[in-house]
Image 1 (tube, one colour):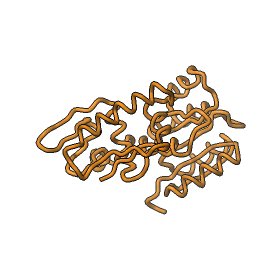
Image 2 (cartoon, rainbow, N blue to C red; image 1 turned 180 degrees about the vertical axis):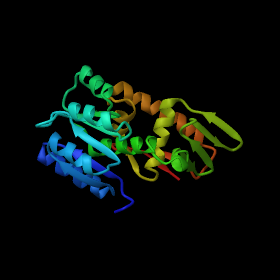
Image 3 (tube, rainbow, N blue to C red; image 1 turned 120 degrees about the vertical axis):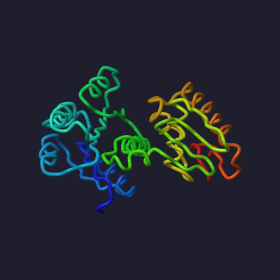
Image 4 (cartoon, rainbow, N blue to C red; image 1 turned 90 degrees about the vertical axis):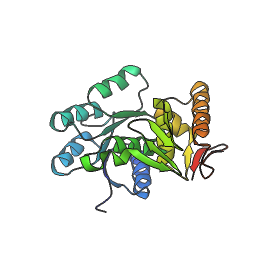
Length: 230
């Protein structure tokens, strides 16, 4: 239990909150679930968490207000907002208040998991480990996410930001299926025909970069997503 990341989940929809808590618990997170903003604020006074997930439309104290109050006291704890609002102004407002990310309902549990993994990789409080957390071994290749460099076979390949983001998601889910819709919403924030075709282009580019190592392969699992096998 001590080495699990602690998450505060604030969601007033009992069914959704329970589903998300159970899912994240299975994924080895230590999750505390509460149903209103005032209770969350009290818990945060006495307990430390690695990440917070707030629904925007909460009773007693909404997610925007909760985020604003927390940022006055703590500017480092990552915050993800869950919102049923699709208006761009609401998303911008949440980010301006200090949220690290937002997810528009409805969303899949896998999409939330990817967002959490990315944020926890990016926000690391240990200077000794911060660089290592962004470096990956892919067969005979070395991938430095921070520098966006894929190196191997006496060559360095500079990646675009989208290539680097996609490769990091694949590395974080190595030998497991990276669900297509979740990857699209995590990187592009949209799942439509155009972003899907864009993802195909970047996937093929990554395959081309890695093709010299026969032990590494990015396979397509039709109907589900892609998988980095090595």
